[in-house]
Image 1 (cartoon, protein in one colour):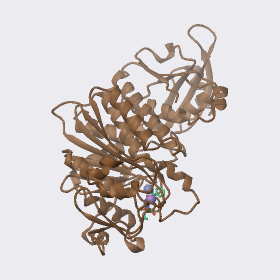
Image 2 (spheres, rainbow, N blue to C red):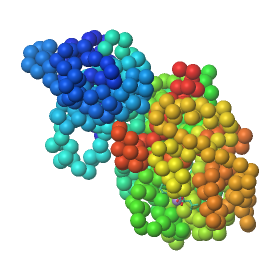
Image 3 (cartoon, helix red, strand yellow):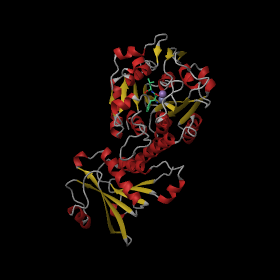
Length: 481
Ligand code: BES
Ligand code: MN
Ligand code: ZN
């Protein structure tokens, strides 16, 4: 994965040494340079968001230099999301034109991070199995945010967040024969090794069984790939709150004995997206040294059919002692999360958020624009929702209700992992999880519709890294930064 060097430059944007300069154009406003303003008047450069015009100007050291004029829409509508979109469109055009170095003239206060994110996310591509194409394209090597008053801190924050999103996307995109639970544990180890503030704990299959994580163990029974419970502990200071970040990491979900149909099954390599987001968010949070404590818990396993696989009707006991009737082995995410959530609570997490590609039904309900959010606490929900809005990783709350809670009661055991009829099935999945958080404020994010095919201009259709930036933002808010 290629990383782009990012800097801030408080000097005049027109003095940049970059080979390509990007100038934003707001609706109804003028560009200071008369030759460029002439293009606006002729209608060649347009102010609408997503419009880009290509021009040239005299370079400071002689010769000419490329200028992209990027439409930003109306100034009063301009926000972080608009900045990410404009930056993504400009970055794509710059790459097409063979640009190596980009300099964005900061068009408005406070959008440094968004411009960096839009650029870096758009320029990511999963090309490690297509090395030739990579060489042919060359690519953008550096990005500068230029202008008086540019914040170095915000620029750096954008870079750290975007690099972590791209690393999560790489983990998502890697096929399951490469990115298996051991591989994810290896990446977690790298993160722990890179930061004094991060410690790691890994449980293998024996330890998962020995500790009584019967729900997680049941899912892992059918696969020859070794499962791992991955725990990262981040301590950024004594004063901040103790957060619990939990992410589903099913490195491949065949459905198990309740086998999925073949169509699109290959997409189930993405069923570890929640776990990838949690792991990479910790790397970013540690780089930013945010003053919070986080226990990150990522249960990682494949879900496979085999002679040793868990079977429909089997009853298991979870770490918190609750018994579960497994009526559909394809509802495996809630099983591994059950024990991961209990573990996060046991470790002292005071507020929990989990991310999981949990239900196909959430795609039917919300599409790819919003993740489904579920909460047992309005204040914690409001904090998570605000972080999501800030980063453009939108969520929409769905209800938990005593009537739908009843649907997850089992016939032969306390809980049923897959109530018949699939009524409100994203909601019942959330109710199932709520049985494992006790009284701790908790938000569940069902990211099945947003972890890939998000379709935003800056991430396109592949893996999106959804949730990494929201988790970083959430830690920033919790730290009062
Ligand atoms: N990983 C899937 C959910 C999913 C499906 C995510 C499609 C993204 C795209 C999950 O493990 C699953 O199979 N859920 C079942 C639950 C059902 C058996 C109660 C589902 O949604 O069909
Ligand atoms: Mn499944
Ligand atoms: Zn799954």
